[in-house]
Structures are given as C-alpha cells and as structure tokens.
Image 1 (cartoon, helix red, strand yellow):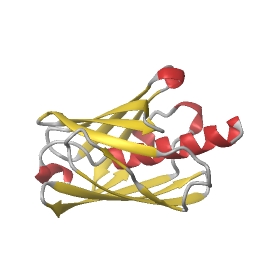
Image 2: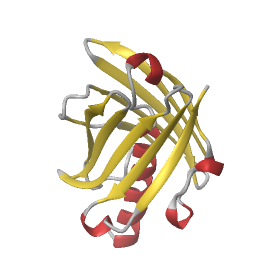
Image 3: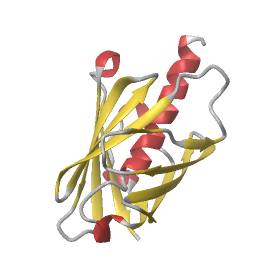
Image 4: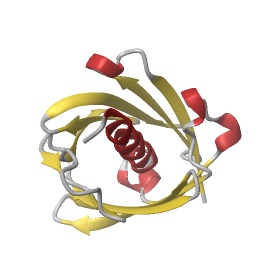
Length: 165
C-alpha cells in the first residue's frame, strides 16, 4: 500500500475512532444516548475534522455496549459499529465502506480511568497508534475527546467536543 493511501486510511480510522470515542465517558446513564459533533468547539490539525459525526450508544447487555457512528469525512459517509466492554481487550470495528483490501487491521481497547473518564487505545496491526481520553462534563451534556498520537504520530494531538442530544 502506498504511503499516501495508508495515511488516508489511517486518517479515516482515526476520525472514526474519534467519533466513536465520544461515547466512552462517565457512568452508563450519562454516556448512553446520541452524541453530535460540535465542530466549532473542536480542534483537529490539518483540517481533518469530520463535516458531521453522530454517535449512538446503547446497552448491548452482559456488560457490553454497542456504538454506532455515522461520519462524513471529506464528502465520504462512513458507518461504523462496535460492540465492546471496558475490559482492556481489543475489539474490531465493522465499517462501511470496508477498508481497501490489504489494509492494516484496526482495533480498539477500552478501560475506565475514573467516574467520568475512559481511555481508548487505537491500534493498527497490533501496535498502538493513538490514545484517546474521553471526559464527560459534570452535567452530562458534553463530552471532550482528546487524542494523542503515539510513535510516528506522536506530534498529532486533537480535541473533539460532542453535545448530547
């Protein structure tokens, strides 16, 4: 895979993870529901902010949650689904459209840091490429997702803000 295609795919995956990451904060009551991107409060380097991102989180039972996100990145609609638990294990999102053949495998793991904060590790082919910290506001109406790249992407930091609908 050429570097430019790989970078585009990784950027798309980071965008999806950021959007989905918006759902991982606080107690169940605060984080289940519909979240919409507030682009005016978000800061993404290089203009990578999705035009629109909506994340819906539901209780999937058995201590697991299901996150469904629809994101428009540079004119492309992307739909992703992920059923996960905050147990540190890797989970693979299902995205539509599917990644190109030969693309690296993308997984995410989740752990609770505190009552209002969750940490997600975004991995590509088993290697962590970014860490996301999701913090819900005290009133449960907004969520701040701070992403820090790891390794070759260590200089990439972004903040996305989502409003609960």
